[in-house]
Length: 120
Image (cartoon, rainbow, N blue to C red; front, side, top):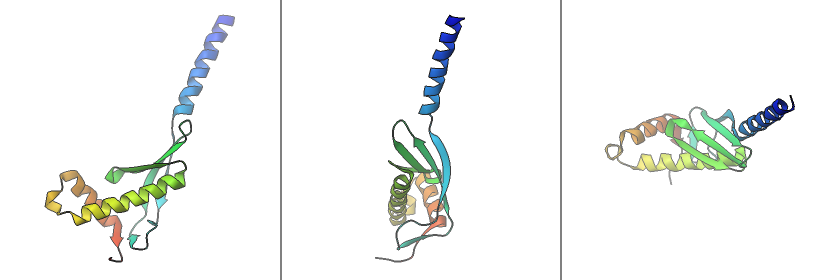
């Protein structure tokens, strides 16, 4: 009986470690890109993954395969917003026929979501 209890304790410890290593995931909506020159026509749904053991949070906008990280969810989202704006500008400035299929799809998604309200 003592042996079986020892095995169960070991199994519980392994399971606990597995649970602690799994990210905590949730979704959030972005309503603003923190830049007065751009606006969103619809909120962006982003996936947040928090890795407690690594003290890192990842924010993802899967439709354009964009992700950013930070120490907190707020920081990760702020970094993602900057990344999305950079990607939007880069793809918008490129000749569409020079882009591959995937970047063209990203550009379509971004053009449906993001618009530049002021030019420089």
